[in-house]
Image 1 (cartoon, rainbow, N blue to C red):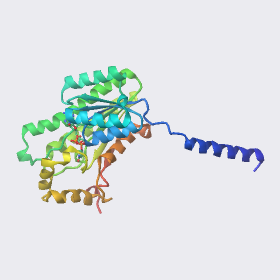
Image 2 (cartoon, rainbow, N blue to C red; image 1 turned 120 degrees about the vertical axis):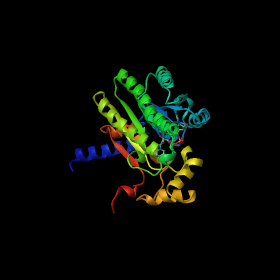
Image 3 (cartoon, rainbow, N blue to C red; image 1 turned 90 degrees about the vertical axis):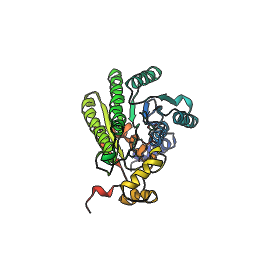
Length: 292
Ligand code: NAD
């Protein structure tokens, strides 16, 4: 090599090594994320993931005790300036409006909405009461509509695009036994995301969906009544249920809140800058979707 070229190569290698040693800029520094259901299993793991990337996170939840607990845990880990709890019932138009207004006044707007508040329910169709049906629709469909509408209003006013991630469910794509209300509400949620992706595209508002399969740790859903109802639906004991979910996956692995949070972070960040209207299943490869 000519001397000058060799010198340049060595120079750039040294520069590269120096860059590797410097702290990496955080991907979401300066961004404001509002996470509904932020005090629950997936919401809290998501808040943690976004905080690690430098975002400020507003935890929105209906459960005040869980909210206080999540706020304390995350403020201790990341600093109290980065975390805000706000009580919002996503089914209440008034609370959604005031919660978003409060956030907007305090932070000057939002960049990311993670719409995740939810529940799980299980009942054969003959035993599905109108109240249970409406509860699923209210939280999982109407609630997602209300928070998305407020986020869109803010995004359009801010004129810098925006980012929405829905946490839906594999059950919004595939039917699951004894869960018609839940599956139908989740399917509506997924279709709402597609419609919003189309509506928001021109303003660079991205909308994507993460579909968890059963999350077996950290979630309040994975306790008590629901677990027993699911075991009954699959005609097995509660002890066998976890193994059922694990073994039906191609990877033979269980799915945890942190796995869902990682996919949400992907959609919330510029790693997915050219993705909208997309759905990612985090299910360890649900073998039921494949013919083998
Ligand atoms: P979780 O019960 O731990 O968390 C849900 C959170 O939503 C709770 O903190 C709850 O208080 C909050 N919430 C419920 N109703 C609300 C309302 N009206 N307004 C505001 N907050 C409300 O459960 P999770 O597993 O973290 O669930 C998160 C999302 O993931 C839900 O949409 C759920 O349907 C979906 N999901 C969960 C699983 C699973 O197996 N856990 C599987 C697929 C999809």
